[in-house]
Image (cartoon, rainbow, N blue to C red; front, side, top):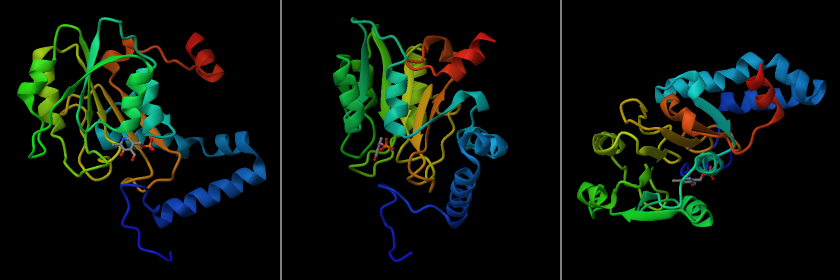
Length: 232
Ligand SMILES: Cc1ncc(COP(=O)(O)O)c(C=O)c1O
């Protein structure tokens, strides 16, 4: 490598072993074709789900592969019904693309304050929550500043107020450097990208969906493979 990368918040360089595995896979795929390579590497590819679930303390089948955090976040948003009179809450550090997602769908949103010391103002959050609040979105670490939001505190706080409020965490900047435990932190949805602190390749990310809220999710895209599997 001819440079020192200080920008893991943008994209890290992959580890030597990751680079070797990707190169080997691409060469193998080029020789035998995509489907054959998939069959040959199935066990290895499936480790994605196992390793991600271990990393965040979830079940294996609560993990979906998506190409990045933005897709994962929007996949969730477009797969859940939010009624016209319902609202969602974001913090004032929300990631720009996520906000665009809400605006594009005309979803009513309220912005909850973060104090000057970087902690969430729970009083303001409580005031913003009403009986029509469906989701609270939290950006764990914003890309524009380094404050780490205490998601465990927010998770417990929310579930005490109303256990049906869906707690969504954007862990794009935290996964790989801050401990995530979706059970302890009471997250229902969590998204992350591979290319930052996980030191994975670009084009990798994940969506965690707590099995308790699975029945509320109706995936807005189903490919033929998923559909056939479901009907079996
Ligand atoms: C907090 C946060 N969320 C989401 C994203 C989007 O990540 P991606 O480009 O992998 O979708 C970023 C990117 O920097 C981010 O900092």
